[in-house]
Structures are given as C-alpha cells and as structure tokens.
Length: 119
Image (cartoon, rainbow, N blue to C red; front, side, top):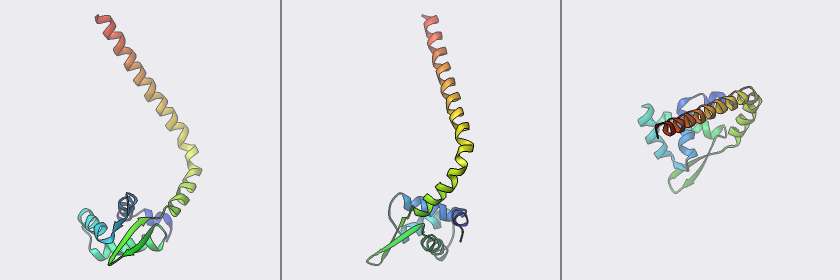
C-alpha cells in the first residue's frame, strides 16, 4: 500500500494523531474511533493492522493489552518527499508573515499616535 493511500484515510490519520500523543491500548483507540466515526470494532482493528503492517505504528503486548505507538520512520520519508515542494510555498509564507507583522506594527503605531493625540 502506498504511503499516501494510508495517510489519505481520515480514520487512520486520526489514529495516528491519537497514538502520537502517547502509547494507547487498542481498546482505548477503538473506543474513541468508534465514537467519532461510527465504525465497528473490527473496522478499527483493520485500520490498526494497516498502520502496523506498513510501519506507521508499533505494537507491544502488556498482559492481555496491545499498546500502540507511532513509528515516525515512514512519516520522515513523507517529510523528505514534501521537502522538494517546500521551496514553492516557503517564500510565500515568509512574505505573508512579513505582511502580518507589518500590519500589526502599523496598528500599534496608529493606536499609540491616537492615544498621544487624545492626551
């Protein structure tokens, strides 16, 4: 399965968000995903399996519990691929940040001038 096919699914993205925050039991993940997406426990298990088999999640057993966590290796590969496109949007975002800062500075200066005129 291709990395973007895996990440393209909103359920799998949400699972990654959950387990990125810290290790979670499959039961806890299932409970949250079932309530948010109204899917069955077997469907959640299938999504966990896809993440695990494709290297996005690791699982360890603790007694009868299966604890999932994120494996960032495939995400780093995605980040490297995206890096080739960052040069297209980074200058635009930098320019936007400059304009936002300029607007804030002008509003501050205008507010200061207005206060001084009123005094």
